[in-house]
Length: 396
Ligand code: HEC
Ligand code: HEC
Image (tube, rainbow, N blue to C red):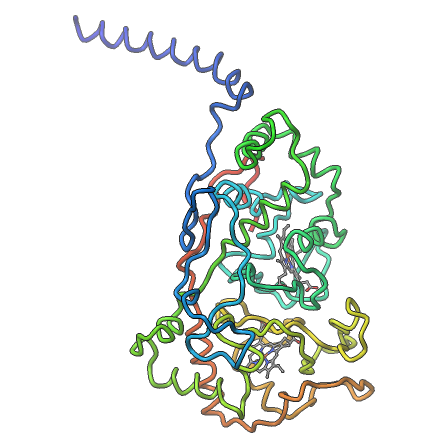
């Protein structure tokens, strides 16, 4: 066969193939969803899949049998109970939803807009910006290790991830969606229909997407964000060369009965999951944030906030519920400026007894910052989806 012929033949078959694709591909995309991409069948790193297709978290800490609600968090204290057991497909579907701005009323805001992986799943702002540029009252917390938390939000007003995420989804200040319109939008996207059918195999493929499935998938993804392999962790597991001398000095200040940091920020999660009134300032001109007083209807909790975990703290500036401190140095200095120094004069709040006047030196404050910088670990950073079922760009 001459070269010309080959070229002719191959271009004819090329055209034929293009026609075949044009006519048959869209067909098979809708019928039975054969040609849509599949969800990842493997658990994310840090998890092991069991016989029931559930991802179970794995960490050296889980081999230590002293639970962290006892004592002040010695090096080999166990972790609190974790919310795991989601399927790989639920987690992967949640990853798409988390980054997809189609979840918001305007189609421009995703969870990742305020919980950006590159900023420790926070947003780098003192307080977040929501729908139509509205400024929220509090800072966006990190989502690393959120699977361990018993209470969510700075004031603890939600107890599960599913309950929590209805807040941003349906608040007019944040994503400004409604349950009806969220479901309508998702059910119109064939690829999401296929993904939900794959992630929730007990239902029939033609069933419509339901709200509790949306909530569960996003909760599953968030629960997969583990950060437990920092320099500090390597030290705690016995590799003593993982921390240098200055970092060890900082750790000793942190754990001391003078600074008392570890009594609230208890290792290994670096929170005892309690609420404490420590008297942090609001930005100029703003009244005191009542914090946990409101949801718990308890005056003794006026100005109390959930003790935040300090993992990946180097990534999540600015700090505190109000985002009022821009650096870690400024944040640790707060603790040594005198008990209640930032509480408005007309406020009579009950400060926690561990908040006192430790009189830490500049050297000690610098070492505390060195130590806090050893709590960074992003090795299990999830991949941002390159494309989304909605066709929109991941909004971050
Ligand atoms: C407009 C910005 C914004 C958007 C969008 C947003 N969040 Fe948040 N998120 C915040 C802020 C601010 C807080 C703290 C509010 C408070 O405590 O009162 C928060 C708190 C949280 C918490 C509690 C963490 C903790 O430690 O208590 C979780 C979990 C969370 N968000 C997940 C999500 C998910 C999932 C979505 C998407 C459905 C989402 N967020 C969308 C700003 C946002
Ligand atoms: C009585 C309990 C308690 C003690 C003791 C304590 N903290 Fe805190 N810490 C908190 C609470 C509660 C917050 C959040 C307060 C707020 O947002 O207004 C916080 C916030 C922080 C933050 C900012 C976290 C973030 O995500 O913005 C850092 C950093 C921090 N503490 C470090 C320390 C260090 C270092 C010490 C020791 C010098 C210490 N803490 C002692 C309860 C405590």
